[in-house]
Image (tube, rainbow, N blue to C red; front, side, top):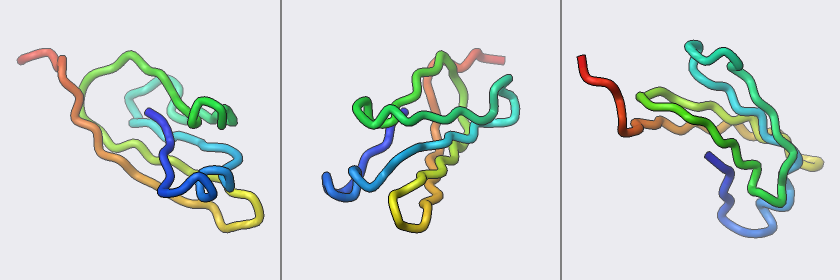
Length: 77
């Protein structure tokens, strides 16, 4: 997953992204300041859940973003 913005200016305001993952993950909170990589986060996973991202911005209120993921590869019952 990674952060996208409507304009380059909007993206450049971002300083840090803190991702909040589903409670079943061993590390439920992961932070990144890797702006040059669009604050990307690589995980090996499957299933469906909502990810929450807290975006810290320069001299502005932070943003709270959510994204529901439904990934392929889920084991069948």
